Amino acid sequence: MSNRQEKIEAFGRLLDVLNVLRAECPWDKKQTENSLRPNTIEEVFELSDAIIKQDVHNVCKELGDVLLHVCFYARIFEEHEDFDIKDVCNQLVDKLIYRHPHVYRPSQIGKPHPIPISQESEEEKSEESNGGSITSELVVENWEKLKLKEKDGNKSVLAGVPDALPSIIKAYRIQDKTRNVGFDWENSEDVWDKVHEEIDELKKELAENNHDRSVAEFGDFLFSMINVARHYHINPDTALERTNQKFVRRFNYIEEKCKGQGRELMELSLAEMDEWWNEAKRKEHENEE
Image (cartoon, rainbow, N blue to C red; front, side):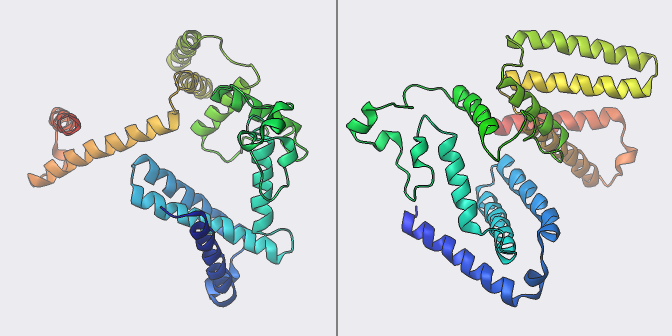
C-alpha cells in the first residue's frame, strides 16, 4: 500500500488536474454547486450499491467519483472567495479532534500536527487526561452531546437529520439520535409490544377501509420495525436492499427459464413461477455451502 507522501502527492495531482479542467474544459467550466448536486446524489448511491455488492473494484472507482465532487465544490466556492479545500480539511480535522476528547485534548485544535493523548509524554499524561476506558456506544453518545455545544453545530438533537434523506435511513437516524440523549426503550424486547400494537391498529384501519388512517398506521408500523432493527444492530436499509437484490436475482431466474422454453411470463401459472422461484432459492443455498 501507499505511504503518506505518496497519498499526499496523489491528492495534489487530483487538485492540479481539476484546476486545469475547470479552466479549459467547456463542461467543467460551466458547472455550479447547483448543477453538480444531482450528480453528487447519484454518485453516492452508486458507491452505496458497490459497497452492498462487495464489489471492491467499483468501491474504489466510486469513491474517486465522490472525492472528485468534494474537491469540485471546494474549487467552485474558492472562486467565490468563500473557502477552499484547505478550509474544508481543517474544519473537518478540528471537528474530529473536538468530538474525540478521549483521543485528543482540546488544545490540539488548530494545530498543524495534532498529537493524540496516547503519544504524549508521561508528564503530559499525568495531567488531566481524557483517555482511559471508553466504549464505542459512549463515543457516539458523547459525539451527539458535543455537537450541540459547538458554535456552528446543531441547535437541536434532530437538526442534523437532512430532510432529503430516504425515509428508512431518516427514521433510523432519528431514532439513533434520540437514543443518544436517553429517549429509547430500556429493553429490546419492549419494542415488540409496540410492533404488535401498531400492526393491530393498522389491521383495524385496513378493515374499515380508511385509506388516510391506513397510510398513517402503516407508517407507524414501519417506524416500529425500524426500531426493532436498530435494537438488534441491523441496518434496515441494508437489510431491505439485500432482499431487493435477492428478489431480483430469483425473478430473473424465472424469466430466464421462461425464455429458455420459448414462452412468455404471462403464460406461466403461479404454481410454475413458485416452482422455479424455489429452484432459484435452492441453487443460491447450494452456492453458499
